Image 1 (cartoon, rainbow, N blue to C red):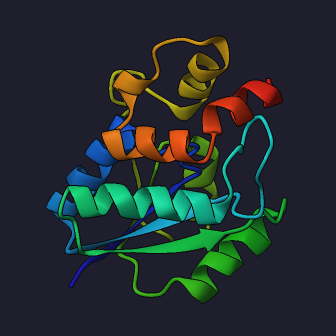
Image 2 (cartoon, rainbow, N blue to C red; image 1 turned 45 degrees about the vertical axis):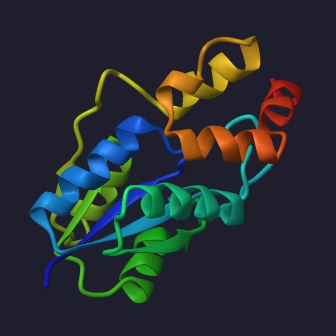
Length: 164
């Protein structure tokens, strides 16, 4: 059974993330979704806690009937050696690590991981979504309906606006 690692902050998870997850699962039997910067919350770059991101991911996976996944949390260490060491020690049997972040890919590759760069889909990213939320723009079209419901439930729009 092949296992792949997909690292992201998922602030919030959006339609491109979901497409990437589905594509990774076409190549692998199971995906380990790693919530990066897991210790961060209530900041402009990381408005949602790791627990909230986990809840969002689970809601989307359930709605899409995706069951062959695990979620792990990866804190920042601000030290590549410690960060990669943490991943190697805590996430076993990974055949490939996927990310859209070149720094992450380079760090992992230099430490023996088989890495694969994900393609950005429609240039969609969470930063742009948070900016749309902060400015009152149309962000809902970029995220699955479960994410809309979650963000509204936790007053995420108000939270993001207050952080900008």
